[in-house]
Image (cartoon, rainbow, N blue to C red):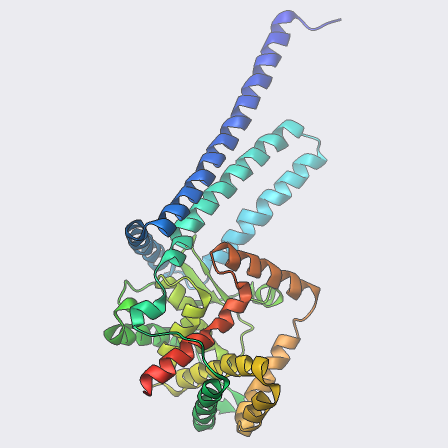
Length: 375
């Protein structure tokens, strides 16, 4: 027995209405994606637009950071878990029950949410990569450097590391820098003092950097020491970071919260904040990281010269680097390589063609600062 014509008509109208809803979500998502692209292009092509958008973005992002900074734990970890894993599990369960229409509607909504997230990411983080180079704001001139110049800086960094290595708090041979929150407060204070010399850092203060609670191991497997989460304005450092690098990584992520986008510029900002501190822990962290980046650059030029500088380090500093390398070695493997590849792609998507290698570009800034300070 066939269905009545009235019921068939209602069923057809319901299907047509469902298709319209699906297309509506997809069209809205496409509009948000187009708006993201337009915002990125306008900020990249017109400096005045970039200045205005970046100011609004920083003001709103700082507000988010201060609000969510009241929480003692990083909300970002729970947002990622609920916002990514939750919908995926729901979609998989719906498909297993063969509820095709429901799964289709849900997928269209997920696509819309993804497009909205891309727009949010571009506005609160991506636009900061369209700012003029930090060297221009600091009046530093970056020029190609010779091996002799790089060796001179590495020698100076070795001297600073050796001077500080025996003065920082330790338990036995291992560094013990104490409370993470105390270090985060110190880093924030250093940027406030740094702003007196460099106006580029004279901005609204974001919330304190937080330490990862449940995502530290995942971050290490993904080859991440920390991240800035533009959806909540939080800066987070992995719980697996070794003691010597905690202050530097805190200062790096705090630089993102201050509206600095490129990774090399955040590394250089972290060096300025740490090396200029009166606190020996921050000083040592800044100079040890500067040594690592600069000596890696020297190794690419002349492995023998790099090895000579490594041999010139004191026993305590060499022990600290051994601890660092052993910690990194724990997470080597396919997952680490995959995570590094994802991070590389994300960094390149923000307009940094060197990807993860852009972290090491800080050597150019370090030498420009060194020869400007010591001319």
